[in-house]
Amino acid sequence: MRACAGLFGAAIAVVLLPSGGATAASPVTLEFAKGSYGALAQGQVTQSEPQQVFKLDVAAGQLLTITFAGAGPMRGSVQCAGNVADGPFEGTGNTVQVKISGECNISVGANTMAAPWTGGFTLAVLAYRVGQ
Picture 1 (spheres, rainbow, N blue to C red):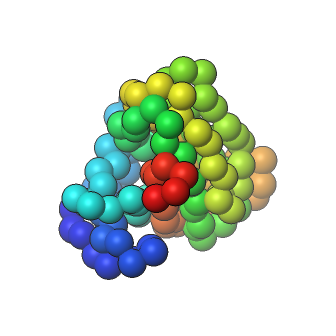
Picture 2: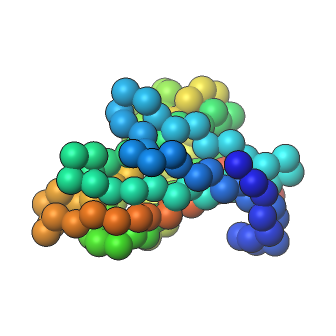
């Protein structure tokens, strides 16, 4: 992982996935660089693995804004502790508010209702409180 300057002038963590990416059984952990409010992950859609799962620890009261883009039509969803969920959505910047501290799982990948495709994608997640 490496930190780089980016979104809103803060450092953000960049997670590079190993070949083959993550599966529902092995989510990729998103880690934020110290002092940052966001993380980026690069993923890969394949015919055998059209979706990847990412996880992150969140605090009660945080807002998560999730956006992604890739080489083809995409779809994603989020599930957090306390029955907080959203999706499916198309990656244009959905925001959810976390009710209790814990883990959130974000599923991102190809929209399986559209024409099949393979290739890369980028996921961006911001975690913040109103007023920050």
